[in-house]
Image (cartoon, rainbow, N blue to C red; front, side):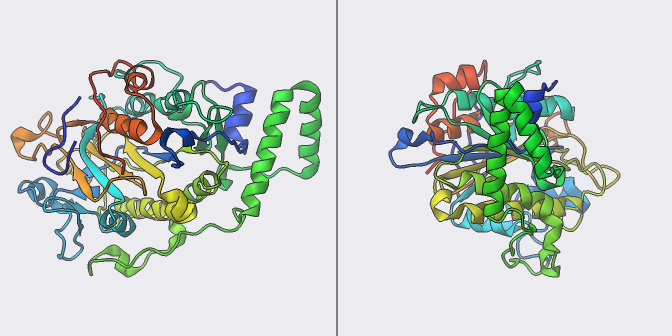
Length: 431
């Protein structure tokens, strides 16, 4: 895969232990890190899932495509330099102006956009689309594990034990479920306070009846201590955003940083846990609310605000890691499918096919839009309605997992992404 115009086409039920480990603050520090795969490197990988189907044509708008404005009509992003215009990426694409920090990373060559990207899914169900995205399978099948957990299980041996995964959210998402051990943290909004006397009774009960639960509770309490000691108990607000680069940007009017708390809280905790030298190195979190059927609001409405929140989360994670950890980090931002190319009758977009994915981090070879751009004329659209899928997301993920984490191609084509040997991993994504 190269840049803009030459990208490849290559192709529960919970038992009580699971509930405690996946539904409470049951995160223990671990010491085995994949240092050995690349000398002194200390690679980290965070996967962010945007649930609901991201409109990639509004995040990274093809403003240079002659058919773009006609298709998008009232929600077309203005060109850079125009009122409310996007932030230039190259001659064809402009970034939504609600994402100035991502644009700054792009300018520093620490972020790239993969456009017209897709999973193997070709229907329009959120549930099936998300299952396929997270399972990493070629078809929708019943499975209890996900590709990121299988990647954990196939990491090169390092230290005294295999590294653990990190999940942030009320439940462990499918992408992180499986045989490899996953440690979880629930954001404060989901937590129920426990009195010290209650914790003591639970500890006594588990010590006498279930040592595994007792160990999980001890680990969870230790992580609470670590989080509180590092300031996690303080009110969480988004950091200041960079100054908007266009006069018409909605950011110029000023946005309350507290509106981004749902984004920044998880990102802040991910950084706190992944930054220490003995912390987890592979994590996953997700954000809901990307289903924009009506009143999409590319600049100042629902989508524009969520893109601003995502930008704030990226900055929070970047700032929380610090420069030393950031330089060895890759963040992957993905969604189950895109939106229709045309606007519907309620100024929104319906379920589509291809969309865009983001790679960012100090370890990313960025400053590029990678795409085999299909065009937006009538004959170019998929099923006469969607952005045509041209780049398999699995090829992108394989390239990151192989070149950043050292997972061999054989394991990627069979174990991590089953039945995908023909889908070759993209090279050159990692610096």
